[in-house]
Length: 442
Image (cartoon, rainbow, N blue to C red; front, side, top):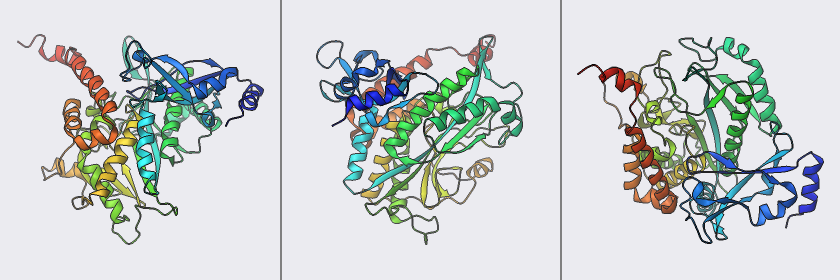
């Protein structure tokens, strides 16, 4: 039982007058509303009400007891927002008709983690957000910092100095929100940055990433810029990934994946988990790289900086960033996701695919000890590639009965419906590239 009066008084003493119950729609976008802090008991036990059909991917009807989406606040997640004075953020998860909503992505991840707990295991994840700082000028999207144009811009200190006010605002905001920051750096494309913070248990890590995005959007706007998680906004430059550093511990706190004597530092379970990821990679691509633009990133294209770092091929290897799965320090770096994913669904699908590898004792192909970009350039034999576009990935997910059932058919059916519509919308659009190539050619 919660002591609501004491919690309300504590929040009011901090100047909080409103709560922001935030949930995540099927696209992975934060949604919510403002509600008075005085009614905290209602928001926790019943939930803040939203029109269900107005939210992407709920599958809820337009009338009846299950037409209302109730976002129930988790009191332990409440914290004041430094960029919204008087407002405290709170994670909430979806209910309808008094029951957990199967199409709520946070509920999907909770269900996946419950299966893991049956084994006495805990999933830990370090999430690495990469993103661009953009602005819209004369109807076109451009890199916000016009001077950020080095051919190889990784770790560019001049850009960091020019944008020091924004970066320090980000630092202060994230620290105020409880982030344990590890580094902020300029990435390998113009206008691209990465922020690293401490890993956490999987559900908490997903919640924290959504809070990161909320803060990042607000801080960028305060400095006249746009925070962009678009995977590939610049042709000819690397795109943005959202790498998951995954480890699992057992009930004794021992690392399940780690084995110091193995050539990759992995235990049998570690190899099997990686095999599961590779076996289900095509279907996982739909959930981890869920936009048309995602597949501009997942392509072996040239880059002014020398490489795009995209994990194009289904392989794993020791500290090999050209592979889909990179093994490092007894953990697995899953390099497929990008910032446009629904992080809850992506983590759930990733976990369930890996566990399938463990349960079936799958064995991956031999570890890759080559630079796959160099092999491709030389015309050598390559591992199988990921889907080339969103439609191929959606077809793979639709055809993967195991993963669809494991993640949840209710969620997957809604996801496929929404994403097939996105694919159709894309193909009805006539781009500047098409006009420039074809308008006067024939």
